[in-house]
Image: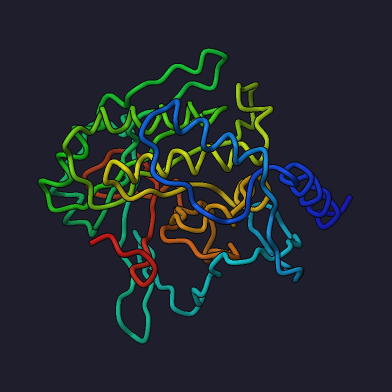
Length: 306
């Protein structure tokens, strides 16, 4: 069966999952506790509709193939121009009117081992997104800390590299999403980050997971709960995701206040809506890091993290 038909069916499933499960596009206030936030966001899950313009948009996605989506209302569109991208042997760059309009970065976890941050800085890295921790996708859903998270953040900042972080979520309720944001705050303490803290909630594709039955509406409200809680602690919130979740799992009309960190391994990004950071490779090579590393570009005409 053609991809177009499959995508249409997926979109129909998404619409059915979201219909009657939250309210519009307004943002709730910052969460002050797990129990209070859960009540606020769970109420929204029961009363959400997706707001669209009705326009049908054709997209050639490097992962999903040729798909059609229904355009969402009030979600900023991607205005990046393919001709403004350049690249060298290490990074991609973006320019606007002949002037640099990007910062170049990496993301990493403890699997990257020892890092020589001075060499990484000299190689041209402007920012790093560090895995702070996560939640296991087994039934227990235990929280864990990346054992080198604080070491990496402090080492990067000492070398003059801007630092942000991400948390690998497997939250199945808004209360768990708030708990994850609180876990991040407790881990970071008084550390200040120049870049955002990203909510990395992923569908587990190759194994059974506790999140398999999470609805689109619940996934959306979990993302909002995490982001609002992180924001209440003084961090910049962000959502990390590939196109499948962004098109067919999240209701972006309810997440339009948060920057997106978009994952697509391609020459030029095809995502229809605006994003602040693009993860474009998982096999980069940067001096100061043994083995391969994920490569990212932050579009400074979109993101204001100074």
